[in-house]
Length: 335
Image (cartoon, rainbow, N blue to C red; front, side):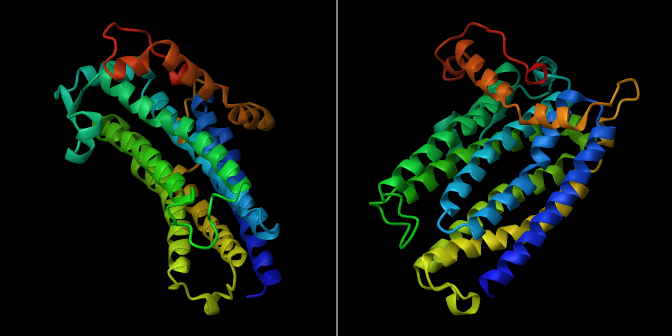
């Protein structure tokens, strides 16, 4: 496939994913009457068109894939934390979630053996487990921008090593991938463990399809790109079939594949998230300007406030066992 043909195909896929997502967001603005949760839903739905647009830019502009890939991965952190905020808001807020946990039949939640080495064998249901879930997700929001900055710095001094053999131990690529993988896996683990505890209460939300689409977009695309680069570095990638003759062609090939896949993920999001009927409350006013809702979703001040308060209120220290006194926690739904 020629570069022109690939560019045209990618553009069509980008426009399709944007059209589908904008129509779905419009439907959410009509039926989703909860303003706090609407903000989180818009952030999650915008993941697909933003991904596809950034991939298209990486495909069209030579030697820019690393910058757009890094920015795209930073947005993953926002999406994962917004997903946690959404389900907490659906359950009635943080204080209500803690109350429900404390009244569960089981007193503790046990971690798998390998994770228990790092996380401890168990967490007490209630405030302790809730803090573990919230901070385990929040750490990804902190780690991602740091590794993104390191990526730019290492790339600027030719020490990142994404091209050639990216898995060399004297280059930063393999270490950045390892850090991001551990951080991402912990955040996803916290979300899934939270669902395991609150599955009965989350049943009306139809959590599974929403989580599957979210994980597919984040995990599948992430490991797909790494796997393609690994195959190429080992000489196992069918370069002649896909007309990939050098490193820059490989980066563009990955971006093209992602543009095409995002069209499918846009359709998957439509079926998983619907039009927001599950959030509709006839007693609440749903009308709000389209632009105002989009700006509210784009304002990431709530993430900053939650991070700051988690440190100031001693939540991190208490989770690590450094303090025992009870401190008030910040409610994601009130931000």
